[in-house]
Length: 189
Image (cartoon, rainbow, N blue to C red; front, side, top):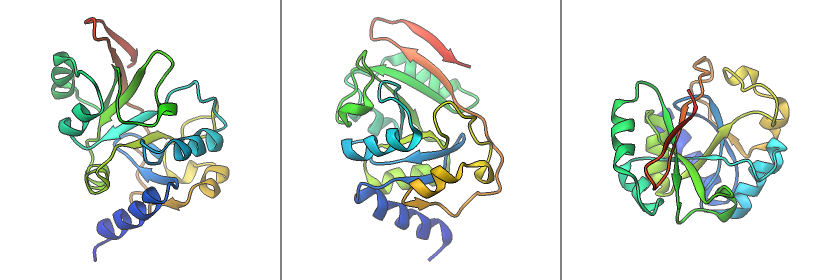
């Protein structure tokens, strides 16, 4: 069994049990869980010491999975994803089929179609979206690479992926909010 398969299988066991993983994403190291499991999402808010009014990002593997978790994906979303030169998270109105505590007070959810191999494989095998939030305590800097992750976070997760630990990508995604009324707003460049 290769390293990628071994790591994905380890993550699947933790995700299916409602646990937390620490994993490399297409942006920064993330804390993840089953995005449909309310208790698991609560664990992330507790670990990050973050109020549950501050929304988290959700990763999906492809457009089909995106369409299963948003009532109506605006057409412009596909253009934005196709034209984006770096990972782009889009905030959608009316998410469906995810944990209620993942949905923001205005009935929106930030979702990104994962662009890296590890995340896509993991999410495809899991067959459900997973939460992705930066691996830091609320208010502290986002770690640029694995070695900068706070020991509290390392101890608080059930499994830390043993891949790409030396990578220093450290760049957050662009965030764009798309309203069903046609509004487009850049939240983070």
